[in-house]
Image (cartoon, rainbow, N blue to C red; front, top):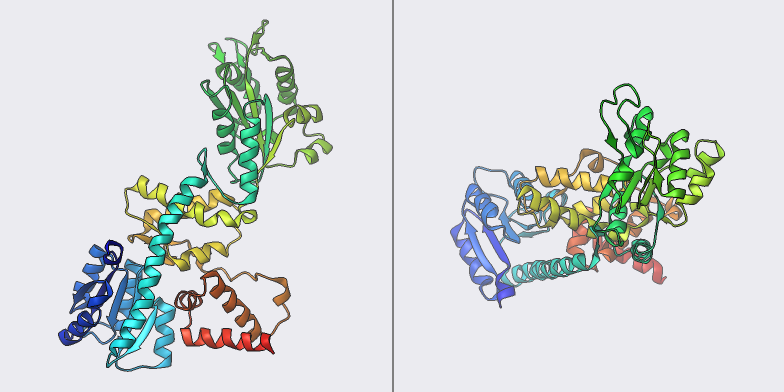
Length: 455
């Protein structure tokens, strides 16, 4: 009974008799019932109590019903809103669904119909609560050294990290920008025998070419203009630990030659020094550039490539691991909610659908930036479509299958409706909400397609 009481419904209606009818009709359903006789009180209750379901009369004096619906969706995009009106029209029903309403019923209220409509949304809310608990458990089970993934591609990456971490001396990580190469490098270090030693980072694309050798190997005082004291290099600093050489494809050829010698001898020579120093360093190199192409263009040493790539870990793009998108979204929302000290629980169905349709050229880093901004800007407990960047909202929908290019528009609509319905587990309320149509239109689309398939 505790779980049942956790679902709350707010009825907003200026007619106390209607509110009493709703309370009496739903008293035995296990719902917590809240009521408000004016718009402002209703909005305050929504902000404070966060009801899962809102029963909204469209004809409240002093405010336009659709404008109030907009405010409710903006404050609590996770809430399921049922609109109640004494004047039904198809146009207003379609507009309401597109604005975010879940259902639309007419007065006078039929108690059996009201119970049935609300019951559907109660079960949906309970399924969401159960799914959230399962998602939280799955997220914990899917975290590996600060990385998140359950897709076959990422499970393979995690398995390879576990296998090579205890043994590697040099390793090459490849993958596009934003795929998480530094996280992999840190995981390799943490799982290696050198985990108690330093972890040093050098971004080759950010180092001035004339200072590369000094940065990596150090220098003696007076070795060059401006060298006013001895300096330890990153190799010496990382002695007993690991050195992460990021964007190694940008390293100058002269420095590549000296790096190869250090890898072969495990000795470094500071710029301007005669003596060499022994170091014990595991080297992790990473690049988003095609090193084999650079070798052919004489921009990267072939012998250094083979020295570094005794083991190569290739990271998949986010578009190649879309199964991980929902987990990553939850991971970042949880992290940013804690960072910003906000009570944010997740993302709306429409928001997640919008993210899933995007190709993510910036990979996980782009997703992280999008959700970081959304968590910073939102005033609700659930990230909604309005919290996402304009370039995601305004972009045209992607065609999901090539075989639809030459089909009639009606057939494309039918196929898309069937796919969305399948993704929602057959839930017509949620599918209609995602598609921006009412359930009758959805039923017509899907049933028409079924009749065609059967014929």
